Picture (cartoon, rainbow, N blue to C red):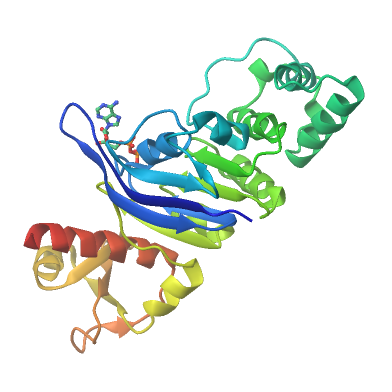
Length: 298
Ligand code: ADP
């Protein structure tokens, strides 16, 4: 199976924002999570891979396909679900999928019915296939977006912030659909929600300020932090002193208005700290913290 390889991909917008800063990464088949805060450059990267915009420099390959030189070849094997995909006509999901399948050149009605049924089933929309897509909920529309991109059996699937704005039940259903698509393909899930990656992805990277920070398997990234995450309960007046002295990666208010802080440190910062088990959100916040420290030392 083919890997997606990006080498030294950079992009600066005309307003001077460096959205991608020398991104180099190899992504293998499976579910890949691209995690980063708003403005990190995720959409820019997704759109660049999807041939919707060009980088200033760098190379992108999917197997043998040189993505920048042979956009059509990439588009044939790509399924892209953008953040926002506009308005749908008042047609039922089934009719609309038949229409899209026809546009994709599937002439035989029998063949079309087979693939449309498959797409409706995988995305859990079979029961509501006769309802108008225009009247679907946000989560159903997102699942319909997946149904639509499954019609041409893509090798590379890109979903850009698909769970933003979904309620917890819809989010769960959507993630289950992604899981069911399986791992024969490369699925890239861009998100700012750590739990999306935790629940699904076998590989991940953190993007911040256009820079790729931590490319690792979630479980290994968590293991690397064992013994390095420290917890302490403080009064909120003590916060500033602690953020100056330690690498505070997270803070949470308790009901009594005290604060739980998490500190990243190779050794116990002092006696008042207790060691705790790391999780994936620690991986994310440590990556961002290290990046912040590097930037301020640069
Ligand atoms: P993300 O998807 O992680 O939120 P984006 O790729 O959308 O990040 O944006 C990265 C940075 O580039 C942000 O600072 C954003 O404001 C800027 N940006 C995105 N698109 C454009 C554009 N067309 N023109 C100028 N700046 C842009």
